[in-house]
Length: 259
View 1 (cartoon, helix red, strand yellow):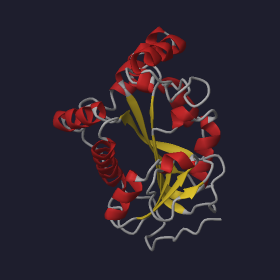
View 2 (view 1 turned 90 degrees about the vertical axis):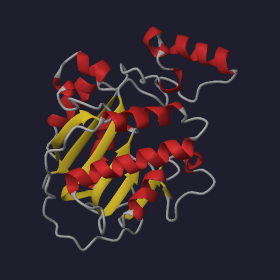
View 3 (view 1 turned 60 degrees about the vertical axis):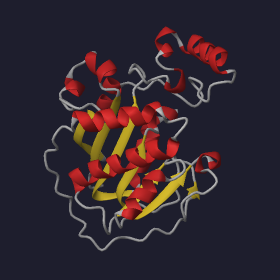
View 4 (view 1 turned 180 degrees about the vertical axis):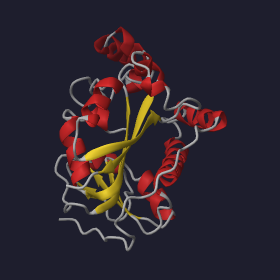
């Protein structure tokens, strides 16, 4: 089992306050960064990590002194930002290749379905844009909930399939079919796409995911909102049909329920 230090913070539920919609300026900055994800990943993911940490602190208060577990965090941009805010942050990544040449200290190669952590080890469990890459989201969420202490928070975001970015590197051509989109990507770039539908990318939808989460007994929804949308971020998630396209990326802030 990985050794994770428990923080000295009280074990009660963190206070959550209504979170205002983010600004248009912030959304435009993130969008510009995403356009350069391939040629400048450091700037892109550094900005995204800072933004995610701000969101976490808006719901759960300062991260300083808290134990944060990042599941599927790649090369560690999020963990590094959490540590800059004095959190005890740990990275668990299932694919050693995603860790890069200089993974953060203490990074662990581990399956997100079976984390080497005891029950309730984390104050916060964090998963950014991972859910669409797992074949069994329910089991994955169960494991995140297991390692989160009662009253602790889960931050789970994913890119929904029908959003303009649902096909990842071959978006928005996924609207015409996955195989056609992959073939176009190959013709345009001269190389195979990283993602293959049904292997390492899955069609995850907002409505079905919300229904599954609401049916669970181990977590409750604190907020369900568009992660990047600059206005009406919670309202758009409540509109069936429209939300599958307009949400772009669903952010779920969940609270771990007592066992």
